[in-house]
Structure formats: C-alpha cells, structure tokens
Length: 267
Ligand code: ADP
Ligand code: MG
Image (cartoon, rainbow, N blue to C red; front, top):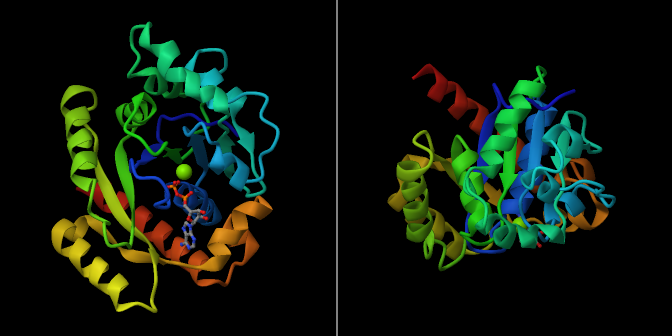
C-alpha cells in the first residue's frame, strides 16, 4: 500500500496548549477511520514522538526529520501499525533540530507540503486521510503542518480555561490561510476529557458551543481511564478496550468527520 496524497484529506491536529488530547485524538481517530475502511497515515510532527510510542512503534530507522530534511520519502519512512490500514511516519527527538536546520534554507514553510506533493507523484495508491500530530507550540513545525493541510482539527480540553489561547490559534490559522495556504479552514473543534461527574464540564461545553457554534463536533470525548492507559500498552484504545466509553466516542467522532467531509465535498 502506498501513501499518495493526491486524494487524501490532510488534517492537522493543532493546539499550542499541551495535554489537550492532540496525540490521543490522532491515534484514536486514525484507528477509528481505519476501522471503517479508510486508509490512514499519521505524521508524527512532535519531537516527543508520543503518537509513535502510543502506537507501539519502538524502532524508528527513519523519521519525520529525515523526511523533512529530504533524506527519505514519506513512503520509505512510513511504518505499518497493529491496526490494518493505519501507518505512521514516526518522530524522534532529532526533529528538534528542524527549526535550526530549516532557518537557513529557503522554502522553510513548505517542506512538509512538498513532501506530500512528491509522494503523490511517486505513489498511485492513495491514503484517504493523513493526520498530522502537531507539537504543543505554534513553531515552524506547526506552521509546516498548517501550510500543508486542507483543514485543522482542534482538540480542546474541557477545563476552566478551555478557550484561553484559542484566539491566538485561530489568528495563526487565519494568517497562514492568507499568506501560505488559501484553502486552509477549521474542520472542527473536538471537546476532550469531558467529565460527566461535574456540572462544571457541562458549563464548559455550553460556553464553547456558544462561542464556536457549529464548528464544534457533536461528539464529546469523555475522560476515560482506558484512554489514558492504552498508550503504555502501545495500543490505540480501540484495540485495548473496544467497549469503553472512550473507544465508542472516537468511533462516533470518525463518522462525524467523514460526514463533514461528505458535506464539504458536495457543497
Ligand atoms: P497533547 O498531544 O495535546 O499534548 P495528549 O493526547 O498527549 O495531549 O493527552 C494528554 C494526557 O491526557 C495524556 O496522558 C493522555 O493519555 C490523557 N488523555 C487524553 N485524552 C484522554 C481521555 N479522553 N481520558 C483520559 N485521559 C486522556
Ligand atoms: Mg501530543
């Protein structure tokens, strides 16, 4: 199976706040999309490499850094996971050198986009979804993700300061749309770590829906201990415990993402 980007929808999972569920959503939305027949490639763009570790990828001969610095093609660096139809380009700490290395070269914002473009030419068999797991920062790596993506998926943790920092993220997305990537838009905002035991979580959901309206997915991801445990077993939660509330929520999110795609394509 190849990973051509020609017909793939490229979604960047971005939020400069750490710990809001970007990586968890990349792994589990990716798994849920693959489970319904999509061909999914995750690109780990965080030097911490949590998406790679969470999917049980320990051995990383080639990484996103090799891809971005032109030493390897995406198809060479992509490794299969335990999930059928789900592959990942893993990250290593090397990726921290990207900012420094790219600063001197031209074209530094479009490195990832150009890698996807090269992949299209080389690989006729396409991935249908590419999910980019961004680092917790609006740095050059995240700019590369936003310059290469069709749309942004924003995980937002159900916490008191949920909306804090969102204006900055939306401002960055808008700036990149104007300067680097005219097609970029917000695919949706997914509320994560919702705690049904507190009325406070409900209030956050209400407030966020009031401010962001239809951009917020109907699906809310509950706080669920199985979701938090699964990465230490190197598995998506859907393989670790299919029945738990977290797995079911990610399945629902996947169908909502596909449905939004359908509507956007029809419009
Ligand atoms: P980010 O990539 O935005 O930094 P992560 O996806 O790594 O965030 O999540 C931060 C922490 O919260 C991780 O330890 C993860 O296991 C945990 N977590 C994420 N989503 C859930 C959830 N729905 N229920 C319980 N724990 C979660
Ligand atoms: Mg992460």
